[in-house]
Image 1 (cartoon, one colour):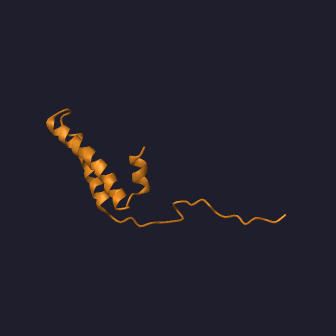
Image 2 (cartoon, one colour):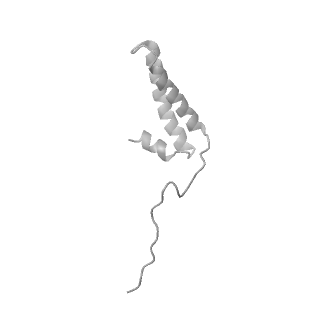
Image 3 (cartoon, one colour):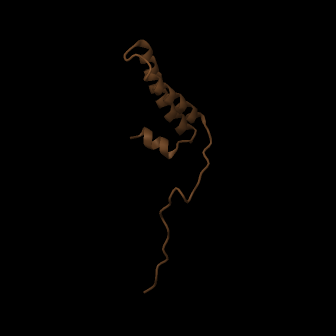
Length: 83
């Protein structure tokens, strides 16, 4: 019986180190995170709260759109947004 050559099919994150470059989707994500943190300091259900909440929701959608159009979607972003 012949021995089969084993082919490694699994890859771990330690095998491949990829340098991440800052892009437009990252900038929009930063605004989204800052807006979300700002909500903590606003009075709940006030006009300011509503506008910041609406803008953070729009930037969340915009981030996904930009990442997919520019082909800069990351594994982390896709898992976070599509769950």
